[in-house]
Image 1 (tube, rainbow, N blue to C red):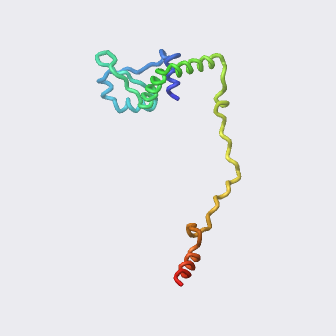
Image 2 (cartoon, rainbow, N blue to C red):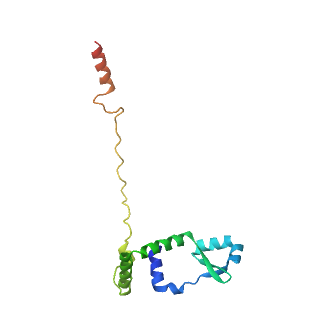
Length: 141
């Protein structure tokens, strides 16, 4: 889900994301707090060294979403379908979220009947133990 959101964000509003920028030295001093922030708020922190961007700190979830979006962006059929879908949305075509995913029907008030238990006490081998014992007695006579 995030992957398509990223594709849309990069295509339409990518310039509006504001990343926090910190020097590597400052980031080192508050690394635990930064990692919690990026995980909770999906923040990204650009780490700089001598004023030059060197790395980005982001949550694992966001990283995985970006990877998935990059993989999808490599497939022309997916890019074309996504672009066409957003064009349809802009034209007011399509269906609402409620129409696409209607609420699940409520379970019926009647409980389902219990499964029938087997009344056999012994595995079925064509005869009961008693019949087997009688057979052995007759064979011994």
